[in-house]
Image 1 (cartoon, rainbow, N blue to C red):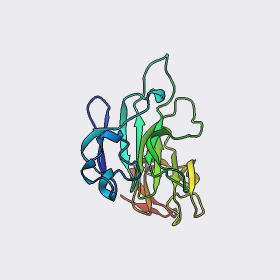
Image 2: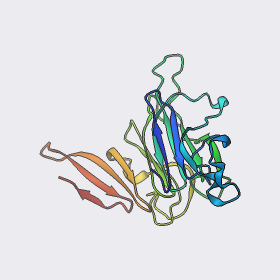
Image 3: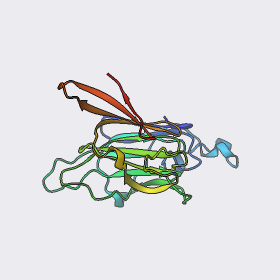
Image 4: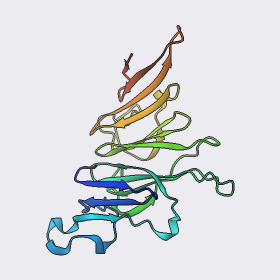
Length: 212
């Protein structure tokens, strides 16, 4: 669920959206919008779930995960597990673009992700009101979007239009990420000197909280 919209997946990996769509956060075709209120703000509202309209040229695979921000949406492709198509799963966004002021994307667009390690894959997404986190199979965390309050964890406030690795987490075995309105959190697996496994939470300012 986002600010006032929702996106869900069916068993075939198709994304469906409903609710607010004034920023394109639903990503649906124009004929799916509710025209009963044409000419007013809610005319962009999608009353019943409609398929997210991925452009044919994207050749998107079935979707594995979705996340909703305040006025935007994000999706992660499934891995192909095909030797002939070993490209890592892509991340897509639509609606109010995460980061600085840019034109809204009324249909999904691919997020320009940095080059990953061989065989590394994005495995999870978490969206806050205006920022996004991505977790990879190598336990690396990437962040982008608005960072006015340090919620990106990049060491300084400010916006970032494309995913950038959260360096303070590079030596942590991160297993889970979450994004709130203006803050972020990561859970890292830790084995202490006694060999005991536990979890530690890492907040956006770098504060580590023992969860044992």
